[in-house]
Length: 150
Image 1 (tube, rainbow, N blue to C red):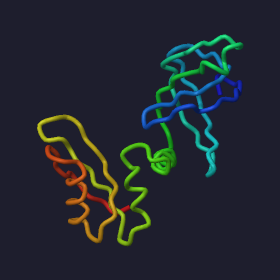
Image 2: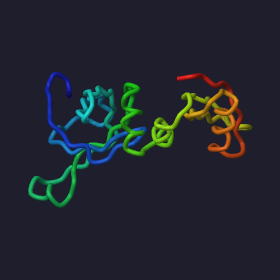
Image 3: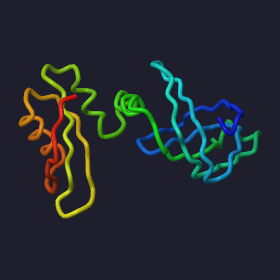
C-alpha cells in the first residue's frame, strides 16, 4: 500500500533487515510503505521504508529485475518465525531445534567491551544449560544479560 493505493509485488529477496520486491509501484526514496506478505501461514503486515529504487524498462523486466529495496521499520514476531523457517537470521537454528525435547529459552547477551547485543533462542532442560548453549553459539566476547523461558 502506497497511500491509499494497493499494488501487487513479488518478493525476490528477504532478510532480517529488509526486502527487495519487484513491483510497478513507484514510491519516492525515503517514503514509508505498508507491505502485506502472504506466506503459506497467516498474512503479515510490515511497515517499511523505501531505500532503493531500481527502474528497468518494461521490455527488460524478464531479464533484469527492477523494483524496490526496502528497510523494515516494524514487523510482527511472525516475520522472524517465517525467516527462521526459511533458514534466515539468528533464529534459524532455534527453529530447527524446536522439535527436540526440552524447554525453549531466549537468551539475551551483550558484547564485552562493545555496544552490540544479541538474542539467541535455544532448546534446553534448564536456564543454566540454555545460557551455556547460547554462549557456545555466540563464541568469545559475550556475556549473558538474562535468560527467559519462551
